[in-house]
Length: 206
Image (cartoon, helix red, strand yellow):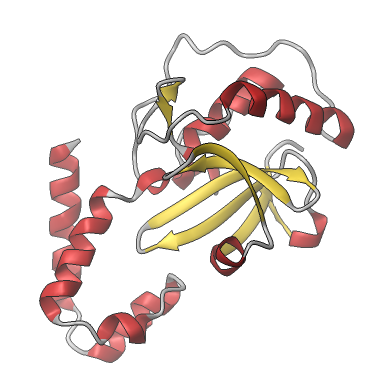
């Protein structure tokens, strides 16, 4: 874990050294929906510190521990188009997991990260196997418009440099997820923060 973080840190620093002017750096940050011009106002040493820090707090965007072989999958078929049933099953999972703290790479009641929570809910509640990490979860299924969201759809956010966050839509503009500060909880998509960092949604169960 530490070795991987160090390698990634060196890679980021190499990228930084290879960018020769502020306009190119600004363009890199804009692609990630970061306010590049605000960041570029900071001294060079602060930028390096932020880049290094992002390696270690990237949360769901990186490579947590692999999925356990002992994971129990649901054997009950679920009609994912039945919004009422899907929402009820999501509420059941929320009751069981609400308040469990965030832990990078975690997959237990002792701690769990955002992609791990999504992974477990789909496996244990719907019997659907999806990738363990956010990086690969955001490559599954099809992209849908925000106004087409249904319970069970995945919602993705860009929460910082090299940071991605994922949750499960529950209906009525709410989604459940693992917050880095409050653990498993629900939030509203129209909350100013989540509205600002919203990226896109995907439907993985077709």
